Image 1 (cartoon, rainbow, N blue to C red):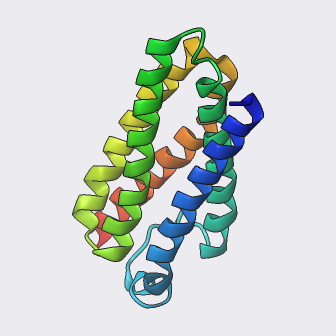
Image 2 (cartoon, one colour; image 1 turned 30 degrees about the vertical axis):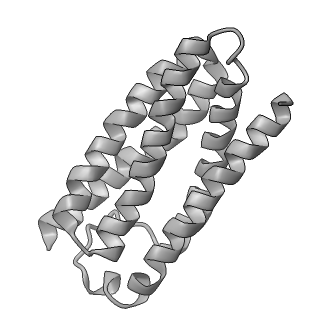
Amino acid sequence: MKKYLRILYCVIICLTVGFFSGKITQSSITTWYPTLIKPVFNPPNWIFAPVWTLLYIFMGIAAGLVWNEIENKQKEVKVALQYFIFQLGLNALWSYLFFGLQNLLLASIEVVLLLLVLIECYKLFKPIHPTAAKLFIPYIAWVSFASLLTLSIFYLN
């Protein structure tokens, strides 16, 4: 498979996961979410869609870059992509737990697990393709913030 097609394929998968995660959140954003007590650092709702879109593009590019190294580092790439798929599943699961089930406790536990898996993914990506690992830094930073936000909302409610 052509290297650019691998990257495009991964970006499309990530954006698709993001699209369906967004669908889960839509109904709760205007009904349940406004009723929650939120910390003072809670960003406005409009910021989430563009940030997540950019992050899904970055993570797709990162996965594609790693996948492109399959001929050189087959075992390492397979393990790294397994972690990548796992984190993508956790990413989608958070939306379901928080907005779908409206379970702040499970969402709080899950987002911390997501953050730990992201850090491991970064560590696995770095020796395979350093640029791919760097593309994960904004994602790790955002999920760190999301973890603080989720835990704060749980605590306040």
